[in-house]
Image (cartoon, rainbow, N blue to C red; front, side, top):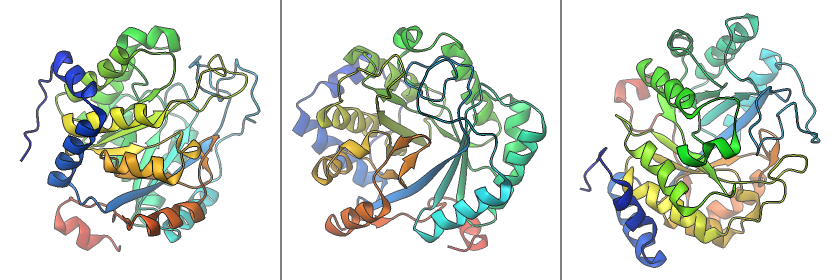
Length: 331
């Protein structure tokens, strides 16, 4: 069994990342099979419960209030509407439901109380419930945990060295502090990043190195390819190639063997063959539905066809948790 390590060096990760791509995929596929069922892919749904109007300046994000994009801001959705969307997602095969709000940080107010109610409702459906709400204190993380939150997403986005080129309204340490607060509340950590933002290979390695040397690896590592949006500073960035995605996914799989590696944003620009290469390289999760917060995503029918052609099956919720938990939750 491949050893789980938290003491990777940048040099080791660089060597893995730069190895011949077919060798890299073979090694990643081998590690993947040690820890996961290679024919299973988790299907997740991501819903924007509060869109736009964000005060931050993340260069890639159409929801930043300072950029002129086509995103129309809306307040927090009604709880009933969110729960109806969660049921729809479950009925179409999703086992994880993630709710995103375009906030800089969570504030202790009525909106947060409503999000806690949403978490309780989605949790009661037997779905893994995830939130991405910006920065979070340990007390707020504990409230989410008590409401039934399963996972919290807070991406590092890029390496610490490249970070200031992308965002100036919060620091890298702010992001790491949020991950620590989530971990201390015993919530599953979901953290990855975006490639194609003008970073170098060293930055990609740097971000993976930060994740792989945390005291515990994130249970979930999303790998996003930038979807350039008109009106944002990164609107003219060239498309990320599938081989760049494969290198990121395979390296993440080798250095964080137990993590769910999520083939996230950018999938809409990939054909089935390119996505198959990513699964071969160790990705075992996708987001379903025609939108990822505000950017386009393949529709459910296309994904169903891909699962059929590639003989993939949807991974059940809470897999790997204590069996008593599985018995309590209808699957």
